[in-house]
Image (tube, rainbow over all chains, first blue to last red):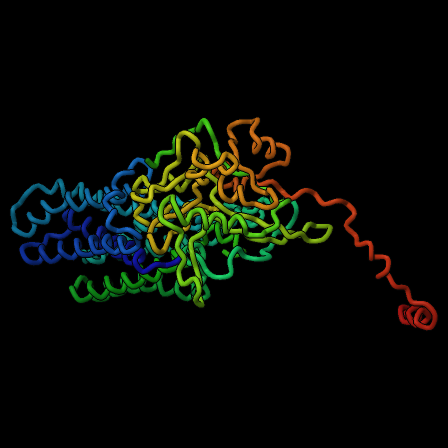
Length: 291
Length: 244
């Protein structure tokens, strides 16, 4: 799959943003006045900014409001609803923190839970696709939730939670790669089943349907850069999980350490998300003799 | 509405004969020609006369070489387009309701006025049947020429999809798979019509008729002439050398 920058920025930024908003909403931090304004602002900027990046992926973004209509069947529509509901639940708590109003934290608690519901719906957009065996597995939602929770804990400066999150994230990353590498074979789609010609014999591409590129090749049969996959996996693992944990363990919850660890984690998340797309093989590639 | 309608009274689709298809691409051209006018946004091309041409097509013809375990390899021409699946995954993923399956005849269509061009339906399709038009930013797919098959302004002979009408070898057949006595149902039953990638559970309506089994006489009539046996001095040398 083509790793479009808009979708990488959308999933990583909003993942981190909703993770952080969950910690703020649940009351794990006790910011007041200007600090509260800035922290809540950062959470909202990440979450909303990420969502705005997702609209860059659309051919007709002016009709994006229509995406709220099909929540009964479509995970993309559910994701739209979940994110809007979450973003509307949290402002009372944010206001209360900023202005010291002392309002009930209940909407914050519900909002925190909804943050993770939102991340789950985002992950299901990918995990639902049977055509992309690597994504079509329960490890995909687990991975997105692990990223969001860990990122939120790092930004919240909760050292032991963040370190624990990093350990879980590292384990989920490694498990995801191990499971993902065998998924295409498990699903069992082959050039023979794609063409129905397997009963005659082994199928090989003789000639493509077109000499130049097309939407399918650009969007779904993206093979550029897979040769660096092994190196990128190490980079993603190190930057997303190992280095942030070490920074926080050594320097503690100092604002500079938190910023450094969060930035490091975000870059690692982007490297992982690039791989998430670049390594995902769509079954339509079989018609082109490619994976 | 992106809910699937359930079993439809009619299941319109194509039976594509891989035995008679000669890979001439007439169906590709006819499809592009018809869908450049009338229904929805025209199928655009990008840089068509430049160094890197590309464009939107609803039908593409691939060629495959199939190697049986015994006997010579065969070339099979393989037209690929929307199969109008009964459990169409492209329909249920759509967030706007633009992608839908018609309750009356099972045709899978896109309401282009509601399409936001997110591309998720193309990701959900195993067959590469959907292409996002780069000029209009909306998803394009085979409409089974819904603007021909019910069109009373056309002579009756033309009320079939453009690809079927144009096919010079009669490799493409249009009909109702819900009716066991229709032309396509009978063809599919006689010839062992195949579903593509059944393991993905899409329940395609279109059927592909496999290439007929080739006759047993596969060896060339010239084969005996090629079996040269050396005589005389060459024969003696052959005998001596093969002893070593």
